[in-house]
Structures are given as C-alpha cells and as structure tokens.
Length: 75
Image 1 (cartoon, one colour):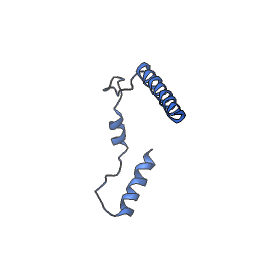
Image 2 (cartoon, one colour):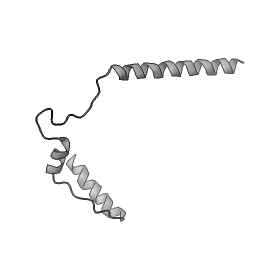
Image 3 (cartoon, one colour):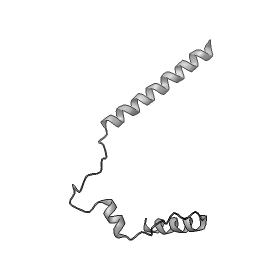
C-alpha cells in the first residue's frame, strides 16, 4: 500500500513540474522568425552568400564526412 502512495506522490510531483513548465512556456515570448522585418537579409540568404558546398547525395561515407567538415567550417 505504501508503494502505491509513493507512486501517486511521485506522479503528483511530476505533474506539478510539467504544469509549471507549461505555464512558463506560455508566458515566454514566442521566437518566430520574421520575414525581413528587421530590414536585413534572411538567415538563408546569408548562408547562401557563404557559398556552401553542395551535397551530391554520395553514399560513400568519406565523401559525406568531407562535405560535413566543409559545412562546419562555415559555422
């Protein structure tokens, strides 16, 4: 019987924590990308200007890894 009580207490604690998390998220401002609202280029346009290497769909792991390294250099 005590195990059941303990399980119910744990569930109540978890539910309270989740509720607090949901309330905090509801109060936080949503981070939605703006469509050029700031007057500058979009993130995608900035990325394209960096001339990233294109991925050709290679199935060879070494070629895919090399492409990933080149992309990581941008960041």
